[in-house]
Length: 197
Image (cartoon, rainbow, N blue to C red; front, side, top):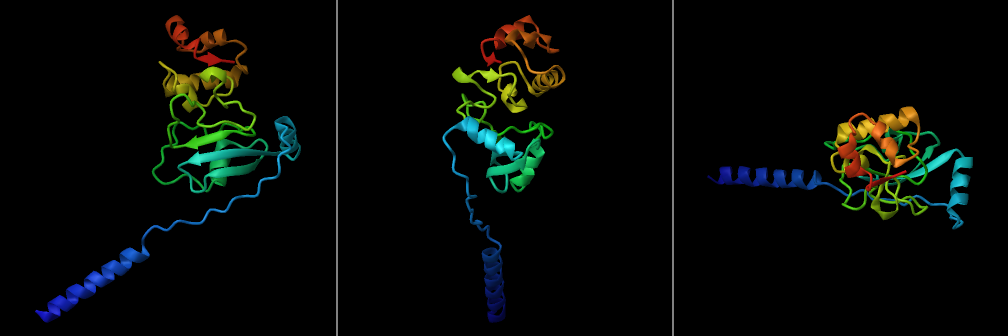
């Protein structure tokens, strides 16, 4: 009986030690030094562009959220890699990994942006990335996830809008939205007050 109790005590101690050593640990986050801004956003962007570099903010379910510096012409996939990669089990199906990033962009991974914040954040120039003043979604800068927040627009129709923009260039007017396959008069009437160019 005593031998059985001793074995049980040893098993409990070993299990406790294994649990203690395998517990999750927080890695310290070190802030990247950010060059001093001149206060002139256009000048700051010109300086970044002159060096062939863009700075984007990556947040959500990535290993190292924060600012990442990328060569000009980099894509969303490069930004995710620079942020340490996506956490296991994160659905990135709605992210267009092949889209080129722009300086000051905010990329939200695996998290739904709160209502009224279609971009999930704002670039340093005060614009809302895919959104615009008044909460309208900008057809020329919106991501698939931002377009998907519009009523009657799912991932398939949002992708058609992106494909139309890629093939034909930026939308010149909101009414150009009618040229997208799947947007008829009824859907256009729903969307025209919610989007801008």
